[in-house]
Image 1 (cartoon, rainbow, N blue to C red):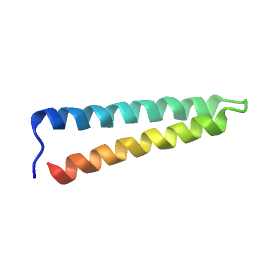
Image 2 (image 1 turned 180 degrees about the vertical axis):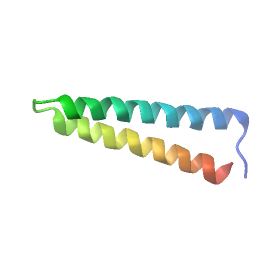
Image 3 (image 1 turned 60 degrees about the vertical axis):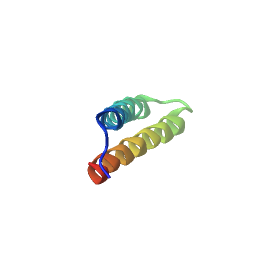
Length: 62
């Protein structure tokens, strides 16, 4: 089953946003010296997971 153009736009946007937020939280985790570092790492992993799932959907459902 193929994706409509609207669905492709949604999953592409989700992948781009997930990647951008993962990079942002990764930078914050690397430069953080306080107690928030664990939260930044968790947010980074969650955003990266969103990106990976979005890319997999785009590749599998073309």
